Amino acid sequence: MKNLGRISYFLGMQVSYSASGLHLSQANYAASILHRAGMAECKPISSPISSKVIVDSTTPAIPLNIATADLFRHLVGSLQYLTLTGSDIAFTMNKLCQHMHSPDDTDFKLLKRLLRYIKGTIKFGLPITATSLDFHAYSDSDWAGDPLNRKSITGFCAFLGSNLISWQVKKQKTVARSSTEAEYRALATAATDITWLRRLLQEFQILSSKPTVLMSDNTSSIAIANDPIFHARTKHIEIDFHFIRECIQNNVLRISHVHTTDQLADLFTKALSIPRFQDLCDKLNIAEATVSLRGGDKQADIS
Image: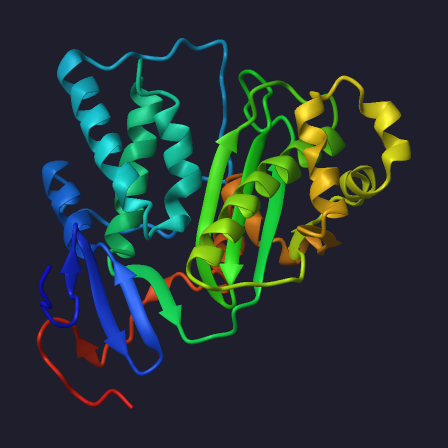
């Protein structure tokens, strides 16, 4: 190992320095994807996916030809790496990845829309600032969000202070019979990630005796997690999901209610209107860096 000075570029990730801290982005990597897609000069758009997704089961989808299908898989595979700093495209990427095996013309149109969104937000990234070490998280679910098989979508994001450090979009494996069940499954998935993140933070000597606050906007799922009396109504849910109650009893988690308008994980569960999407991006600190100093071997005063 050798000291190369301040980091400025590593594995496609750019690190910018400012008075408030660091900003991680993948502008050059995103630009290379746009160039490969032939959309380097495309017109930008304000959101990665339309909030009005119409599924017409009567009209058969038009499959892509072999060359276009290969391009689709290549671009979607490349874009997955872009989600390392682009939490705003995670939901759309989840949609696209579900159609890698047999993409059609609708999937390719969604991919092109996403690329147009990336064009307009190419310098956006993940800020890392000096802040408190308070660890908290948000969990949400869109009940029966998939219009084809009616499986729900789980969304999760975790913060260390004001810094977004983890997020996830995942389709649930089985169909939920109610919104409460879908939200409860999302809480269980979030609890798994929180347990792992708490252990990881301990490796960095970030210790906390307080339980991690996990926020949900569904009061019924919170009641099920806290009160075992309600479990008689949820016997059809797999037993392993009930480990969340053990997390609460062991002082690892504390489930708290948050209003739907303040539910940040909403960004990861559904297609949103442009005002709502931009509002949540602002709350997640997804923005362009205000750079006063670049990394590398350069040294300067950033105070």
